[in-house]
Amino acid sequence: MEAAAGPDVWFLSLPLMTKVWLGSTAVVTIAVNMQLMDFRDVRWINWEAVYGDRKELWRIVTPFLYVGRFEFNTLVCFLLLSQFSQRYEQGGPYNTGGGGRTADYCFMLLFLMTTTLATLPVLSKALEYYYYNQDSATTMSARTMPVIFSRTLIYSLLYIWSKRFSEAEANIYGIPIPALYLPFVHLGYSMFMGGSYIDIVQGLAVGHCYYFLVAVLPLQRGGRGLLKTPQFLIDWFHGPEITFSATAAEHLAEHQPPPRQEGEQLEQEEFQTTTTTRPDGHSPSEPEQLPMSDSSSASAQPRENETFGNPRQQSE
Image (cartoon, rainbow, N blue to C red; front, top):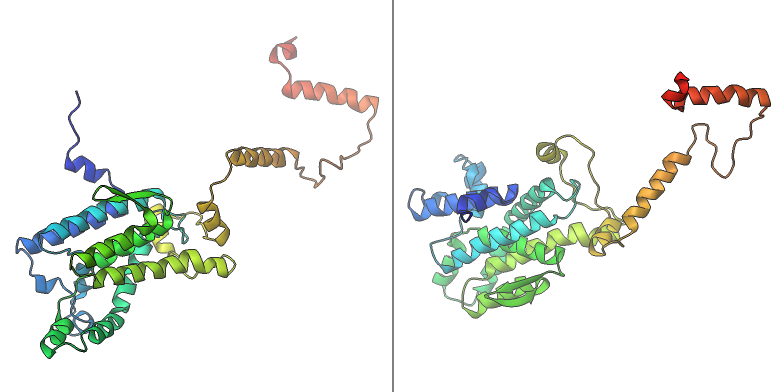
């Protein structure tokens, strides 16, 4: 009887980007909760703290890795991250130049993180408008509240997964739900329970921006998308090789599986093309007519036997 696989075996079996993301998030979250790291050194402050005299460059990444205190919502975030990141990475990310593989997934995470930071002024204005009729203390706390973006990134991924695999089935607390509605169910549940939902809304908006640029816009521009995975990421994860381009036709083909016999027909067509193509350019329908005589055919017969004949006949 084989022993059950432990957590280490499960973690090592995860895809590359899921393993890096989940492991980094666990390390930062546990370190802050165990007071090995100060929360004030992890949270986002502003761009001046990053590029000013302090040069705290790590603040670009750490707000996306700290989930929160040890509580139920933190456990839910870890479950969402491990489950849907694994399913998205193994199922095949959107192809933005790397063939729908690890490089495209890494580029997607970089895009989501950059867009989240770029939309902070919009979020700040939205919070200011939301608390406009509140007292000054509430307004001040809303403006100076610590900002972390882990849930924003997780729900961006969840939204993109629901669009990529809209026909899949998911469940929340044992209730089966179509994948397309799963992000909005989580949003409604958070609002119903009185929890924070601003970061979820931002995550869904950021995820929709990515989905629109890679899946919707190329259909309107003849297959030409605006997002393309940098070549250095493709070389880093997969080595220098021929890259794949994402087109609108490819996007439609991914959502509409090809017939069963299509692959066999393509192989037969390629085989026929390679066998019937002549180096002199003649097609099979226009055979080359060469003058043949009895002497030439007789001289050609021994040469053919010499090349392709049976060795036993050659010896005789």
